[in-house]
Length: 73
Image (spheres, rainbow, N blue to C red):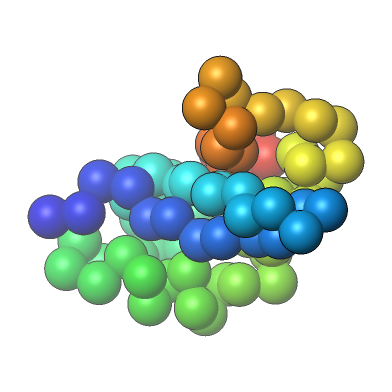
């Protein structure tokens, strides 16, 4: 089972990994345990908007990634 879904964003020609937990996908978007990426595809605009806001706020993790939390959606 996938515990985290990851999508990539490009910021200043650099790749930024944006992660959202499978649990949040289940809670917010009723994602199935077997196919969490289907929820990512279906709710891409909302997830991208949350990622964009976090990137603009420079809310990067130590490894340079972005973590999208329930409060961000």
